[in-house]
Structure formats: structure tokens, C-alpha cells
Image 1 (cartoon, rainbow, N blue to C red):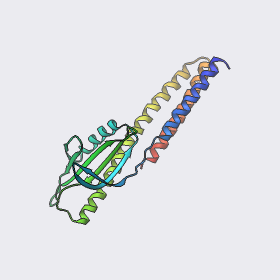
Image 2: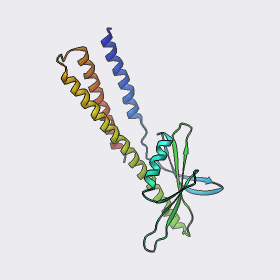
Image 3: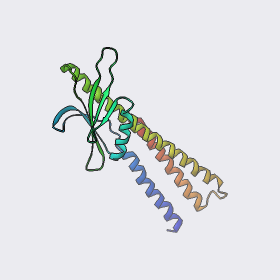
Image 4: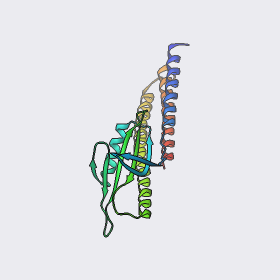
Length: 198
């Protein structure tokens, strides 16, 4: 096996593993009921996990939630208030994000305070569950759309380099063809990921 064939084979292997990583990325929208304690107070709400880096998730959650609620940062958790409209009372809830052992993130939400009936508390919890799902859809969609944009740019650049070559059967052309083919596979995988986030 000559050097050019080895290079092409290595590119194929590396692209396969990169493609596998794209397909294997967890974009789960799963949310589960959760009872947790903060500073001695017990809360009943919902939680959801992220395999993405903790600091990245925390930053995106802060950006998302500050558009919807007044936020007070207690360092260990956020206390959030959504202003009521007309005769409705403000809605207060608590948000806590923990770093997991795998350096991912666990996000928890629960209603807090207020003179609510059991039915109202149940309704609030459901609203918070919807909020968690909405955040994950918004967050994941943004990530994949950016990856699609970058892959399209990379494929276009590879295609231009291929068309500039005078000899379409040269080892360099074979290398670029393989690179472009793998790039198109990655793009298809990303677009497929986008359809699963809903």
C-alpha cells in the first residue's frame, strides 16, 4: 500500500469516527419528576439531563431564562419570578443546575412560594416541564443549525479546491473526493439530527 492510499484510508477511518460521534450525540428531550432539597427546603418539580458541558449549558440556560423571568442569583441556585398579568399573581420558581460525574449538567425546576391551591401547583409544575422541553429544543436546534452551517461551508471549500485541480485523477483529487463525500455524509447526519429534535 503506497503513501497516498494510506492517507486516503486514514481519512476514511477518521471521518467514520467523526460521523459516528455526530449520530451518537444525545439530543434527548426527556424530563422526569424530581424532589430535591436546597438549603434545607424541599421542592417538588422536574429535572432533565444534558450530556453537553456543564458550563456551556449553564450559560445558555441563563440566556434563555433571563428573557422570561426576573432572576436572582444565589450562586447555588436561581430564584425566578414571572410577573403576573391583570389579576394573576406573579409566579415564583427555583432553578438549580448541577454538574454530573460525566461533566454534563442536571437542570432542576420547581415552583416556590405563593398561596396556591393543589390544582394550581400541579398546573405550575406542568408549565415548568414544558419550559424545560422548550429550552432543550431551542438549545439543541441552535447547536445543530450552527454545525450544519459550518459543514456546508467546509463542503463548499472542498468542492472549490477539487474543481481547481487540472488533473481530476491525481492522488490529491482522490483525497479531496473522499473528503467531500465524507463531508456530505456528515451534513446528511446533522440534518437527520435536526429532525429528531422536536
